[in-house]
Amino acid sequence: MSTQNPGPQPEDTPGLDAGGGVQPGDTPPDAGQTSGLSHPQPNPSRVMPVFAILLIALIVLGVAAFFVARAFALFD
Image 1: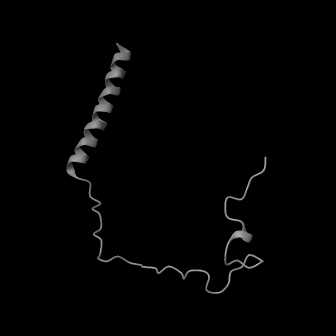
Image 2 (image 1 turned 120 degrees about the horizontal axis):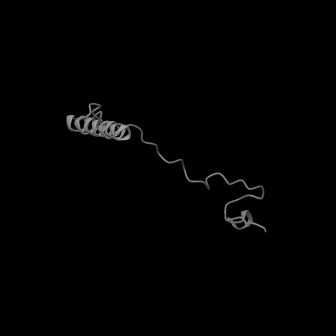
Image 3 (image 1 turned 90 degrees about the horizontal axis):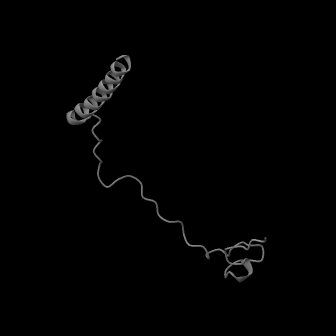
């Protein structure tokens, strides 16, 4: 199985020299680069809301209660 080059052939591409190079001025200038932000971004809060902490605690307690109930059921 042979694969074909998906790009244009160098001999069919305008502006290329015989060795594959380009003439000066044939390439577009480098794109301008912007760095930084237009305004400072606020830092996200690292404190977990109280509701989330309570929800996690309820889930952990529920799982623990399930395993304790299963343990008592095994010994009955």
